[in-house]
Length: 138
Figure 1 (cartoon, one colour):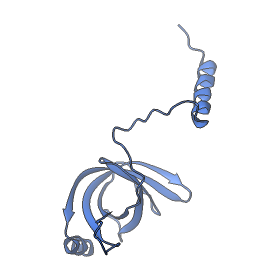
Figure 2 (figure 1 turned 180 degrees about the vertical axis):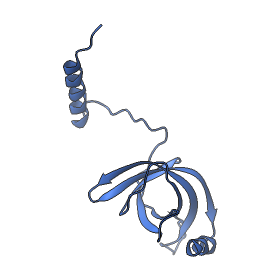
Figure 3 (figure 1 turned 90 degrees about the vertical axis):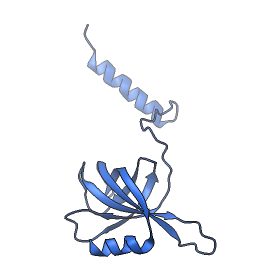
Figure 4 (figure 1 turned 180 degrees about the horizontal axis):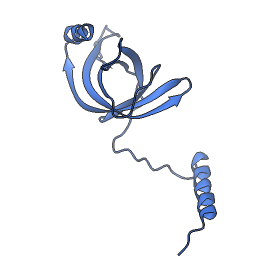
């Protein structure tokens, strides 16, 4: 049995075209639902001189996606602080800080920045003073 590669390539191109026009549903490969939330994050990693500040573009129970000014590499281990809204009446800036251990699973160059997808390996909720002290100690 032989496969006509040019016919197969044309079929794949047709499927992509139909999907881009909304005529074919997109099958999501991810296991977890992603929420399009913009939470501030602080990224720390061995070898980084300073903490990297960014914000999530989307978030799931397994991980997050953000953009940064510096590149990270696949499988790189990071310490991340997610600043989740605390929803305290009268305090619109209140956040709950989630300290996470994360691993970079995908990177891409994106409009002069770097898109970084991370899987959250572990997390804990720390008091504000504990997180700020550990960030200053490196």
